Length: 529
Image (tube, rainbow, N blue to C red; front, side, top):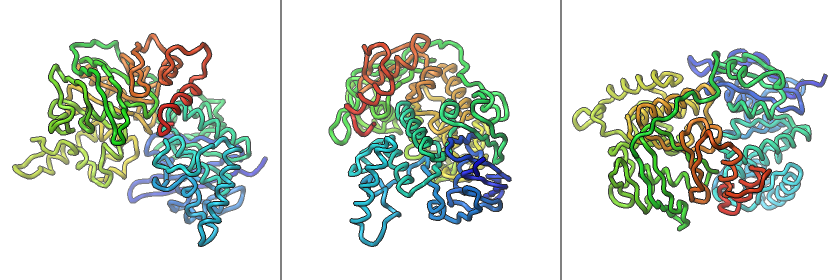
Protein backbone atom coordinates (compact mmCIF):
# COMPACT_ATOMS: atom_id res chain seq x y z
CA UNK A 1 0.00 0.00 0.00
CA UNK A 2 1.11 3.59 -0.64
CA UNK A 3 2.00 5.89 2.22
CA UNK A 4 -0.82 8.10 3.54
CA UNK A 5 -0.87 11.56 2.00
CA UNK A 6 -1.38 12.84 5.55
CA UNK A 7 -0.95 11.13 8.88
CA UNK A 8 -1.52 12.83 12.22
CA UNK A 9 -0.40 10.97 15.34
CA UNK A 10 -1.46 11.88 18.88
CA UNK A 11 -2.38 15.52 18.16
CA UNK A 12 -3.53 17.47 21.23
CA UNK A 13 -4.34 21.16 21.59
CA UNK A 14 -5.79 23.12 24.52
CA UNK A 15 -6.90 26.73 24.80
CA UNK A 16 -6.66 27.41 28.50
CA UNK A 17 -8.98 24.94 30.24
CA UNK A 18 -10.70 23.98 26.96
CA UNK A 19 -9.29 20.80 25.36
CA UNK A 20 -10.01 21.41 21.66
CA UNK A 21 -8.16 18.29 20.40
CA UNK A 22 -7.27 15.27 22.50
CA UNK A 23 -4.82 12.63 21.27
CA UNK A 24 -6.14 12.57 17.69
CA UNK A 25 -4.72 10.21 15.08
CA UNK A 26 -5.91 10.08 11.49
CA UNK A 27 -4.65 8.71 8.15
CA UNK A 28 -5.75 10.19 4.82
CA UNK A 29 -4.85 8.19 1.72
CA UNK A 30 -3.68 9.91 -1.48
CA UNK A 31 -6.17 10.56 -4.28
CA UNK A 32 -9.22 10.30 -2.01
CA UNK A 33 -11.86 12.61 -0.61
CA UNK A 34 -11.79 12.18 3.16
CA UNK A 35 -14.65 13.69 5.15
CA UNK A 36 -14.38 14.96 8.71
CA UNK A 37 -17.67 15.59 10.50
CA UNK A 38 -18.69 16.59 13.98
CA UNK A 39 -20.79 19.08 15.88
CA UNK A 40 -19.81 22.74 16.01
CA UNK A 41 -17.05 22.95 18.59
CA UNK A 42 -16.01 19.30 18.11
CA UNK A 43 -12.47 20.40 17.17
CA UNK A 44 -12.53 19.85 13.39
CA UNK A 45 -11.38 23.32 12.38
CA UNK A 46 -8.77 23.40 15.15
CA UNK A 47 -7.27 20.15 13.89
CA UNK A 48 -7.10 21.43 10.31
CA UNK A 49 -5.69 24.76 11.51
CA UNK A 50 -2.86 22.80 13.12
CA UNK A 51 -2.25 20.98 9.85
CA UNK A 52 -2.22 24.32 8.00
CA UNK A 53 0.11 25.99 10.51
CA UNK A 54 -2.35 28.45 12.06
CA UNK A 55 -1.99 26.75 15.45
CA UNK A 56 0.85 24.77 16.98
CA UNK A 57 -0.11 21.47 18.58
CA UNK A 58 0.75 20.98 22.25
CA UNK A 59 1.91 17.50 21.32
CA UNK A 60 1.76 15.06 18.43
CA UNK A 61 3.40 14.52 15.05
CA UNK A 62 2.53 15.27 11.41
CA UNK A 63 3.61 13.12 8.46
CA UNK A 64 3.25 14.09 4.79
CA UNK A 65 3.71 11.19 2.34
CA UNK A 66 5.45 9.22 5.08
CA UNK A 67 7.90 11.94 6.08
CA UNK A 68 7.71 13.68 9.44
CA UNK A 69 7.33 17.43 9.00
CA UNK A 70 7.13 20.52 11.18
CA UNK A 71 4.46 23.04 10.20
CA UNK A 72 5.04 26.18 12.31
CA UNK A 73 3.10 28.48 9.99
CA UNK A 74 0.99 28.58 6.82
CA UNK A 75 4.05 29.20 4.63
CA UNK A 76 5.45 25.87 5.79
CA UNK A 77 2.11 24.19 5.02
CA UNK A 78 2.06 25.67 1.52
CA UNK A 79 5.66 24.51 1.00
CA UNK A 80 4.53 21.01 2.03
CA UNK A 81 1.85 21.07 -0.68
CA UNK A 82 -1.15 21.87 1.55
CA UNK A 83 -3.82 24.39 0.61
CA UNK A 84 -6.84 25.42 2.66
CA UNK A 85 -10.16 27.01 1.72
CA UNK A 86 -11.68 28.53 4.84
CA UNK A 87 -15.38 28.76 5.67
CA UNK A 88 -15.06 32.55 5.64
CA UNK A 89 -12.99 33.38 2.57
CA UNK A 90 -9.62 35.13 2.93
CA UNK A 91 -9.96 37.45 -0.05
CA UNK A 92 -9.34 41.18 -0.49
CA UNK A 93 -12.67 42.42 -1.79
CA UNK A 94 -11.40 45.45 -3.74
CA UNK A 95 -8.66 43.40 -5.47
CA UNK A 96 -9.20 41.50 -8.70
CA UNK A 97 -9.27 37.72 -8.93
CA UNK A 98 -5.76 37.77 -10.42
CA UNK A 99 -4.39 40.02 -7.68
CA UNK A 100 -5.85 37.80 -4.97
CA UNK A 101 -4.31 34.69 -6.50
CA UNK A 102 -0.87 36.29 -6.68
CA UNK A 103 -1.05 37.94 -3.23
CA UNK A 104 1.63 36.40 -1.03
CA UNK A 105 3.07 34.35 -3.90
CA UNK A 106 4.82 37.08 -5.88
CA UNK A 107 8.01 36.08 -7.71
CA UNK A 108 9.85 39.32 -6.99
CA UNK A 109 9.62 43.03 -6.28
CA UNK A 110 8.14 43.76 -9.72
CA UNK A 111 4.46 42.78 -9.82
CA UNK A 112 4.03 42.77 -13.61
CA UNK A 113 5.85 39.47 -14.33
CA UNK A 114 4.03 37.75 -11.44
CA UNK A 115 0.64 38.85 -12.77
CA UNK A 116 1.50 37.77 -16.32
CA UNK A 117 2.64 34.35 -15.09
CA UNK A 118 -0.47 33.97 -12.90
CA UNK A 119 -2.76 34.88 -15.80
CA UNK A 120 -1.23 32.11 -17.95
CA UNK A 121 -1.44 29.52 -15.19
CA UNK A 122 -4.98 30.50 -14.21
CA UNK A 123 -6.10 29.93 -17.80
CA UNK A 124 -4.56 26.44 -17.72
CA UNK A 125 -6.00 25.60 -14.29
CA UNK A 126 -9.45 26.85 -15.23
CA UNK A 127 -9.49 24.67 -18.32
CA UNK A 128 -8.15 21.61 -16.51
CA UNK A 129 -10.45 21.73 -13.47
CA UNK A 130 -13.54 23.59 -14.79
CA UNK A 131 -12.77 26.56 -12.53
CA UNK A 132 -13.69 29.26 -14.99
CA UNK A 133 -13.65 32.77 -13.51
CA UNK A 134 -12.83 36.21 -14.94
CA UNK A 135 -9.28 37.04 -13.74
CA UNK A 136 -9.99 40.79 -14.00
CA UNK A 137 -13.23 40.77 -11.99
CA UNK A 138 -13.23 42.47 -8.61
CA UNK A 139 -13.96 40.08 -5.73
CA UNK A 140 -16.70 42.39 -4.43
CA UNK A 141 -18.50 42.10 -7.78
CA UNK A 142 -18.70 38.29 -7.98
CA UNK A 143 -20.88 35.89 -6.01
CA UNK A 144 -19.80 33.54 -3.26
CA UNK A 145 -19.69 30.55 -5.60
CA UNK A 146 -17.15 32.30 -7.80
CA UNK A 147 -15.23 33.54 -4.75
CA UNK A 148 -14.85 29.95 -3.61
CA UNK A 149 -13.42 29.03 -7.00
CA UNK A 150 -10.87 31.81 -6.50
CA UNK A 151 -9.84 30.29 -3.16
CA UNK A 152 -9.37 26.89 -4.81
CA UNK A 153 -7.40 28.48 -7.64
CA UNK A 154 -5.18 30.21 -5.06
CA UNK A 155 -4.31 26.84 -3.54
CA UNK A 156 -3.71 25.16 -6.90
CA UNK A 157 -1.57 28.09 -8.09
CA UNK A 158 0.62 27.45 -5.04
CA UNK A 159 0.89 23.82 -6.25
CA UNK A 160 -1.16 22.23 -3.49
CA UNK A 161 -1.53 18.46 -3.72
CA UNK A 162 -3.58 18.33 -0.52
CA UNK A 163 -6.66 20.56 -0.34
CA UNK A 164 -8.58 21.22 2.89
CA UNK A 165 -12.09 22.67 2.58
CA UNK A 166 -13.77 23.91 5.78
CA UNK A 167 -17.59 23.91 5.47
CA UNK A 168 -17.34 24.72 1.76
CA UNK A 169 -21.09 24.76 1.06
CA UNK A 170 -22.13 26.84 4.06
CA UNK A 171 -22.71 29.88 1.83
CA UNK A 172 -23.54 28.13 -1.45
CA UNK A 173 -26.85 27.43 -3.13
CA UNK A 174 -27.73 23.81 -3.99
CA UNK A 175 -26.75 24.38 -7.63
CA UNK A 176 -23.41 25.93 -6.63
CA UNK A 177 -22.76 23.05 -4.22
CA UNK A 178 -23.38 20.51 -6.98
CA UNK A 179 -20.89 22.33 -9.20
CA UNK A 180 -18.32 22.42 -6.36
CA UNK A 181 -18.50 18.65 -5.91
CA UNK A 182 -18.06 18.09 -9.62
CA UNK A 183 -14.87 20.16 -9.34
CA UNK A 184 -13.68 18.19 -6.30
CA UNK A 185 -14.16 14.87 -8.11
CA UNK A 186 -12.20 16.26 -11.05
CA UNK A 187 -9.38 17.22 -8.64
CA UNK A 188 -9.49 13.75 -7.11
CA UNK A 189 -9.29 12.14 -10.56
CA UNK A 190 -6.16 14.21 -11.17
CA UNK A 191 -4.56 12.71 -8.06
CA UNK A 192 -5.24 15.46 -5.53
CA UNK A 193 -6.08 14.55 -1.93
CA UNK A 194 -9.05 16.38 -0.45
CA UNK A 195 -10.14 16.77 3.17
CA UNK A 196 -13.77 17.89 3.40
CA UNK A 197 -15.01 19.34 6.69
CA UNK A 198 -18.79 19.51 6.68
CA UNK A 199 -21.82 18.91 8.88
CA UNK A 200 -24.07 17.98 5.95
CA UNK A 201 -24.53 14.22 5.92
CA UNK A 202 -25.94 14.15 2.39
CA UNK A 203 -22.72 15.70 1.10
CA UNK A 204 -20.61 13.23 3.06
CA UNK A 205 -22.52 10.28 1.63
CA UNK A 206 -22.35 11.58 -1.95
CA UNK A 207 -18.84 13.03 -2.10
CA UNK A 208 -16.43 11.14 0.17
CA UNK A 209 -14.58 7.84 0.11
CA UNK A 210 -13.85 7.74 3.84
CA UNK A 211 -15.25 9.69 6.78
CA UNK A 212 -13.88 10.39 10.25
CA UNK A 213 -16.17 11.49 13.09
CA UNK A 214 -15.14 13.86 15.89
CA UNK A 215 -16.97 14.53 19.12
CA UNK A 216 -15.86 16.95 21.85
CA UNK A 217 -12.27 17.07 20.70
CA UNK A 218 -11.77 13.33 20.18
CA UNK A 219 -11.85 11.09 17.12
CA UNK A 220 -14.66 8.60 17.67
CA UNK A 221 -14.62 6.62 14.40
CA UNK A 222 -13.24 6.36 10.87
CA UNK A 223 -15.28 4.34 8.39
CA UNK A 224 -15.63 3.77 4.67
CA UNK A 225 -18.51 5.92 3.47
CA UNK A 226 -20.00 3.02 1.52
CA UNK A 227 -20.26 1.00 4.75
CA UNK A 228 -22.20 3.52 6.85
CA UNK A 229 -25.45 5.53 6.75
CA UNK A 230 -26.56 9.08 7.63
CA UNK A 231 -28.34 7.78 10.74
CA UNK A 232 -25.20 6.01 12.01
CA UNK A 233 -23.02 9.05 11.34
CA UNK A 234 -25.47 11.39 13.09
CA UNK A 235 -25.47 9.17 16.18
CA UNK A 236 -21.65 9.03 16.18
CA UNK A 237 -21.49 12.82 15.91
CA UNK A 238 -23.96 13.68 18.65
CA UNK A 239 -23.74 10.63 20.91
CA UNK A 240 -27.48 9.92 20.65
CA UNK A 241 -30.07 9.14 18.00
CA UNK A 242 -30.97 12.22 15.97
CA UNK A 243 -34.14 12.90 13.98
CA UNK A 244 -33.09 13.72 10.42
CA UNK A 245 -36.52 15.22 9.74
CA UNK A 246 -38.61 17.93 11.41
CA UNK A 247 -41.08 16.43 13.87
CA UNK A 248 -44.16 18.66 13.83
CA UNK A 249 -47.93 18.40 13.83
CA UNK A 250 -50.08 20.06 11.13
CA UNK A 251 -50.34 23.83 11.49
CA UNK A 252 -53.43 25.44 12.99
CA UNK A 253 -53.27 28.86 11.32
CA UNK A 254 -55.28 31.77 12.71
CA UNK A 255 -55.72 35.38 11.67
CA UNK A 256 -53.28 37.13 9.34
CA UNK A 257 -50.37 38.64 11.28
CA UNK A 258 -48.33 39.92 8.33
CA UNK A 259 -49.90 41.24 5.12
CA UNK A 260 -47.63 42.48 2.32
CA UNK A 261 -49.11 44.11 -0.76
CA UNK A 262 -47.17 45.18 -3.87
CA UNK A 263 -43.88 45.63 -2.01
CA UNK A 264 -41.05 47.09 -4.07
CA UNK A 265 -37.42 47.65 -3.09
CA UNK A 266 -34.75 49.54 -5.03
CA UNK A 267 -31.10 49.19 -3.97
CA UNK A 268 -28.47 51.92 -3.75
CA UNK A 269 -27.46 51.38 -7.38
CA UNK A 270 -31.03 51.98 -8.56
CA UNK A 271 -31.73 48.30 -9.29
CA UNK A 272 -35.19 47.04 -8.35
CA UNK A 273 -34.61 43.98 -6.16
CA UNK A 274 -38.18 43.28 -4.97
CA UNK A 275 -40.81 43.66 -7.69
CA UNK A 276 -44.37 43.90 -6.45
CA UNK A 277 -44.33 41.08 -3.89
CA UNK A 278 -47.61 40.30 -2.12
CA UNK A 279 -47.89 37.65 0.59
CA UNK A 280 -49.56 36.81 3.88
CA UNK A 281 -48.35 35.01 7.02
CA UNK A 282 -50.90 33.89 9.58
CA UNK A 283 -50.61 33.20 13.27
CA UNK A 284 -49.50 29.65 13.94
CA UNK A 285 -47.86 28.96 10.59
CA UNK A 286 -44.45 29.00 8.90
CA UNK A 287 -44.27 30.51 5.42
CA UNK A 288 -41.04 29.43 3.73
CA UNK A 289 -39.46 31.56 1.00
CA UNK A 290 -37.40 29.41 -1.37
CA UNK A 291 -35.00 30.96 -3.84
CA UNK A 292 -31.44 31.11 -5.07
CA UNK A 293 -29.43 33.74 -3.16
CA UNK A 294 -29.59 37.16 -4.77
CA UNK A 295 -33.18 37.05 -6.00
CA UNK A 296 -34.68 39.56 -3.59
CA UNK A 297 -35.32 37.50 -0.47
CA UNK A 298 -32.60 39.30 1.51
CA UNK A 299 -34.07 42.70 0.64
CA UNK A 300 -37.54 41.43 1.55
CA UNK A 301 -36.36 40.48 5.05
CA UNK A 302 -34.46 43.75 5.45
CA UNK A 303 -37.51 45.89 4.63
CA UNK A 304 -39.75 43.93 6.98
CA UNK A 305 -37.06 44.11 9.67
CA UNK A 306 -36.59 47.87 9.32
CA UNK A 307 -33.10 47.71 7.84
CA UNK A 308 -34.04 49.06 4.41
CA UNK A 309 -36.75 51.28 2.86
CA UNK A 310 -39.37 50.14 0.38
CA UNK A 311 -42.69 51.12 -1.15
CA UNK A 312 -46.05 49.41 -1.06
CA UNK A 313 -48.10 48.30 1.91
CA UNK A 314 -47.06 46.18 4.91
CA UNK A 315 -49.49 45.56 7.78
CA UNK A 316 -48.80 43.87 11.10
CA UNK A 317 -51.92 42.72 12.92
CA UNK A 318 -53.92 45.04 10.68
CA UNK A 319 -51.81 48.12 11.40
CA UNK A 320 -49.76 49.78 8.66
CA UNK A 321 -45.96 49.80 9.06
CA UNK A 322 -43.86 52.79 8.06
CA UNK A 323 -41.63 51.84 5.11
CA UNK A 324 -39.84 55.12 4.45
CA UNK A 325 -40.19 57.50 7.42
CA UNK A 326 -38.76 57.99 10.88
CA UNK A 327 -40.46 54.84 12.22
CA UNK A 328 -39.09 52.50 9.56
CA UNK A 329 -36.04 51.41 11.59
CA UNK A 330 -35.31 48.10 13.30
CA UNK A 331 -35.98 49.47 16.80
CA UNK A 332 -39.51 50.53 15.80
CA UNK A 333 -40.12 47.08 14.31
CA UNK A 334 -39.10 45.41 17.57
CA UNK A 335 -41.46 47.64 19.53
CA UNK A 336 -44.27 46.54 17.20
CA UNK A 337 -43.60 42.83 17.91
CA UNK A 338 -41.26 41.82 15.07
CA UNK A 339 -38.13 39.79 15.91
CA UNK A 340 -35.46 39.29 13.25
CA UNK A 341 -32.76 36.62 12.90
CA UNK A 342 -30.72 38.04 9.99
CA UNK A 343 -29.15 35.92 7.26
CA UNK A 344 -25.57 36.89 8.16
CA UNK A 345 -25.17 36.39 11.90
CA UNK A 346 -21.62 37.74 11.99
CA UNK A 347 -22.25 41.00 10.10
CA UNK A 348 -25.83 41.76 11.12
CA UNK A 349 -26.75 39.60 14.11
CA UNK A 350 -23.76 39.98 16.41
CA UNK A 351 -20.92 42.31 17.28
CA UNK A 352 -18.13 39.77 17.17
CA UNK A 353 -15.80 41.51 19.65
CA UNK A 354 -18.60 42.03 22.21
CA UNK A 355 -19.23 39.45 24.91
CA UNK A 356 -22.20 37.09 24.78
CA UNK A 357 -24.15 39.00 27.43
CA UNK A 358 -23.59 42.26 25.57
CA UNK A 359 -24.89 40.70 22.35
CA UNK A 360 -28.05 39.51 24.11
CA UNK A 361 -28.89 43.18 24.72
CA UNK A 362 -28.13 44.08 21.08
CA UNK A 363 -31.21 45.94 19.82
CA UNK A 364 -33.00 45.67 23.17
CA UNK A 365 -30.92 48.12 25.20
CA UNK A 366 -34.04 49.97 26.38
CA UNK A 367 -35.67 46.86 27.85
CA UNK A 368 -36.84 47.63 31.42
CA UNK A 369 -35.34 44.30 32.52
CA UNK A 370 -31.88 45.69 31.79
CA UNK A 371 -32.44 49.19 33.22
CA UNK A 372 -31.20 50.75 36.42
CA UNK A 373 -32.43 54.30 36.12
CA UNK A 374 -30.45 55.97 33.35
CA UNK A 375 -27.89 53.12 33.28
CA UNK A 376 -27.98 49.50 32.18
CA UNK A 377 -28.17 46.84 34.87
CA UNK A 378 -25.28 44.62 33.81
CA UNK A 379 -25.95 42.09 36.58
CA UNK A 380 -29.53 41.61 35.38
CA UNK A 381 -28.31 41.29 31.80
CA UNK A 382 -25.69 38.69 32.76
CA UNK A 383 -28.30 36.71 34.69
CA UNK A 384 -30.73 36.83 31.76
CA UNK A 385 -27.98 35.71 29.38
CA UNK A 386 -27.02 32.80 31.64
CA UNK A 387 -30.61 31.56 31.47
CA UNK A 388 -30.70 31.86 27.68
CA UNK A 389 -27.37 30.04 27.38
CA UNK A 390 -28.73 27.17 29.49
CA UNK A 391 -32.08 26.94 27.67
CA UNK A 392 -30.49 27.09 24.22
CA UNK A 393 -27.57 24.80 25.10
CA UNK A 394 -24.90 27.32 24.06
CA UNK A 395 -21.39 25.85 24.34
CA UNK A 396 -19.21 26.75 26.12
CA UNK A 397 -21.74 28.08 28.68
CA UNK A 398 -19.75 31.25 29.38
CA UNK A 399 -21.48 34.62 28.92
CA UNK A 400 -18.17 36.47 29.31
CA UNK A 401 -16.68 35.08 26.09
CA UNK A 402 -16.77 37.33 23.01
CA UNK A 403 -19.05 36.19 20.20
CA UNK A 404 -16.05 35.40 17.99
CA UNK A 405 -14.96 32.72 20.48
CA UNK A 406 -18.09 30.62 19.83
CA UNK A 407 -18.52 28.25 16.90
CA UNK A 408 -20.95 29.22 14.14
CA UNK A 409 -23.74 27.05 15.49
CA UNK A 410 -23.43 28.49 18.98
CA UNK A 411 -23.31 32.03 17.60
CA UNK A 412 -26.60 31.25 15.85
CA UNK A 413 -28.09 29.98 19.11
CA UNK A 414 -27.21 33.27 20.83
CA UNK A 415 -29.04 35.24 18.12
CA UNK A 416 -32.05 32.87 18.21
CA UNK A 417 -32.25 33.00 22.01
CA UNK A 418 -32.23 36.81 21.94
CA UNK A 419 -35.00 37.02 19.33
CA UNK A 420 -37.25 34.04 20.09
CA UNK A 421 -37.47 34.71 23.83
CA UNK A 422 -38.91 38.16 23.08
CA UNK A 423 -42.21 36.37 22.40
CA UNK A 424 -42.69 38.19 19.08
CA UNK A 425 -45.90 38.24 17.05
CA UNK A 426 -43.79 37.77 13.91
CA UNK A 427 -40.38 36.11 13.60
CA UNK A 428 -38.32 36.89 10.51
CA UNK A 429 -35.61 34.26 10.17
CA UNK A 430 -33.02 34.09 7.40
CA UNK A 431 -30.87 30.99 6.77
CA UNK A 432 -31.48 29.64 10.31
CA UNK A 433 -29.07 26.70 10.02
CA UNK A 434 -26.38 28.00 7.66
CA UNK A 435 -23.05 26.51 8.76
CA UNK A 436 -24.71 24.68 11.68
CA UNK A 437 -24.16 21.03 12.65
CA UNK A 438 -26.78 18.29 12.69
CA UNK A 439 -27.43 18.39 16.43
CA UNK A 440 -27.86 22.17 16.45
CA UNK A 441 -30.06 22.00 13.33
CA UNK A 442 -32.44 19.65 15.14
CA UNK A 443 -32.49 21.99 18.16
CA UNK A 444 -33.08 25.16 16.07
CA UNK A 445 -35.89 23.54 14.10
CA UNK A 446 -37.58 22.45 17.33
CA UNK A 447 -37.45 26.02 18.74
CA UNK A 448 -38.96 27.46 15.54
CA UNK A 449 -41.76 24.88 15.54
CA UNK A 450 -42.45 25.55 19.24
CA UNK A 451 -42.86 29.25 18.45
CA UNK A 452 -45.27 28.37 15.64
CA UNK A 453 -47.25 26.10 17.97
CA UNK A 454 -47.49 29.00 20.43
CA UNK A 455 -49.50 30.87 17.78
CA UNK A 456 -46.76 33.04 16.33
CA UNK A 457 -46.25 33.84 12.64
CA UNK A 458 -42.92 32.93 11.08
CA UNK A 459 -41.43 34.03 7.77
CA UNK A 460 -38.54 31.69 6.91
CA UNK A 461 -35.96 32.34 4.18
CA UNK A 462 -33.58 29.51 3.28
CA UNK A 463 -31.62 28.33 0.26
CA UNK A 464 -31.77 24.77 1.66
CA UNK A 465 -34.67 23.12 -0.18
CA UNK A 466 -34.70 20.21 2.25
CA UNK A 467 -35.13 22.67 5.13
CA UNK A 468 -37.86 24.60 3.32
CA UNK A 469 -39.79 21.42 2.54
CA UNK A 470 -39.57 19.94 6.03
CA UNK A 471 -40.08 23.09 8.12
CA UNK A 472 -42.63 25.14 6.15
CA UNK A 473 -46.42 24.89 6.25
CA UNK A 474 -46.63 26.84 2.96
CA UNK A 475 -43.87 27.58 0.46
CA UNK A 476 -43.52 30.66 -1.76
CA UNK A 477 -40.80 30.69 -4.43
CA UNK A 478 -39.00 33.91 -5.38
CA UNK A 479 -37.09 34.56 -8.61
CA UNK A 480 -35.70 37.86 -9.88
CA UNK A 481 -37.57 39.74 -7.15
CA UNK A 482 -40.97 38.23 -8.03
CA UNK A 483 -43.00 35.49 -6.39
CA UNK A 484 -43.38 32.60 -8.83
CA UNK A 485 -46.17 30.94 -6.89
CA UNK A 486 -47.06 29.07 -3.71
CA UNK A 487 -46.98 25.35 -2.99
CA UNK A 488 -47.89 23.08 -0.10
CA UNK A 489 -44.89 20.96 1.02
CA UNK A 490 -46.81 17.71 0.69
CA UNK A 491 -47.79 18.56 -2.89
CA UNK A 492 -44.38 19.48 -4.33
CA UNK A 493 -40.75 18.30 -4.38
CA UNK A 494 -37.20 19.61 -4.79
CA UNK A 495 -37.35 19.30 -8.58
CA UNK A 496 -40.44 21.48 -8.98
CA UNK A 497 -39.17 24.04 -6.48
CA UNK A 498 -35.76 24.09 -8.14
CA UNK A 499 -37.30 24.87 -11.52
CA UNK A 500 -39.47 27.63 -10.03
CA UNK A 501 -36.31 29.03 -8.38
CA UNK A 502 -34.85 29.21 -11.90
CA UNK A 503 -37.87 31.15 -13.15
CA UNK A 504 -39.17 28.19 -15.14
CA UNK A 505 -42.88 27.62 -14.66
CA UNK A 506 -43.31 25.35 -17.69
CA UNK A 507 -40.05 23.43 -17.95
CA UNK A 508 -39.89 20.36 -20.18
CA UNK A 509 -39.81 16.97 -18.48
CA UNK A 510 -36.29 15.94 -17.48
CA UNK A 511 -34.81 19.44 -17.32
CA UNK A 512 -31.69 19.31 -15.06
CA UNK A 513 -32.47 21.53 -12.08
CA UNK A 514 -28.90 22.69 -11.36
CA UNK A 515 -28.33 23.70 -14.99
CA UNK A 516 -31.63 25.56 -15.15
CA UNK A 517 -30.92 27.46 -11.95
CA UNK A 518 -27.40 28.41 -13.00
CA UNK A 519 -28.39 29.44 -16.53
CA UNK A 520 -31.36 31.57 -15.53
CA UNK A 521 -29.63 33.12 -12.54
CA UNK A 522 -26.68 34.19 -14.66
CA UNK A 523 -29.09 36.12 -16.86
CA UNK A 524 -30.64 37.93 -13.90
CA UNK A 525 -27.72 38.96 -11.73
CA UNK A 526 -24.08 37.99 -12.16
CA UNK A 527 -23.41 38.76 -8.48
CA UNK A 528 -25.57 35.84 -7.37
CA UNK A 529 -24.01 33.20 -9.60
